[in-house]
Image (cartoon, rainbow, N blue to C red; front, side):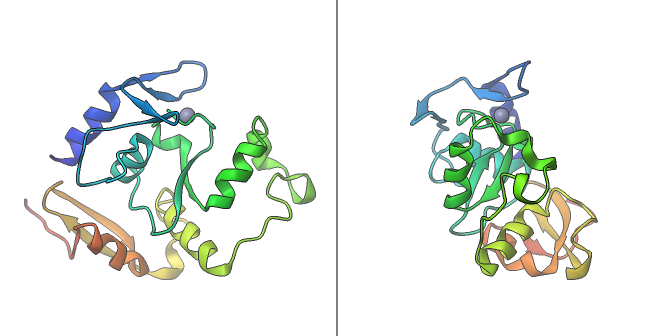
Length: 176
Ligand SMILES: [Zn+2]
């Protein structure tokens, strides 16, 4: 199954909530999360994790795909981000306070929360995939391609291993 087919599958099986912009999964749920058919991309069959992998990029080992919108059945890739278990729990605890991203210092919901440097690096790397050009410069980039999805893309060089694990190949292909 190609990437585009996965995209279509995710879009087809979710309904856009016009108020929140959430893509709400309209097939089966488990613990409130959307469930997909069995596939090789996301073994857990969690729809939001599949969506993140298909639309955004790989999920580093040991980290979670969390919801900005606090809506577990949402599969809108723009509402998803990579975080730790701690992020996920704290996120739920301060439900309704998400619009605090612009708040600085101790007014910010992020105030006083500490991550180990290692998970900071991982989170930074994963979330930097959205920010093309920006934030990635210091690492240097390289090209990778994926035969199944017939796609080239540029990634920060230090992420290469993770992508290769997910079936990508280093280099650039002009014709598929
Ligand atoms: Zn959402």
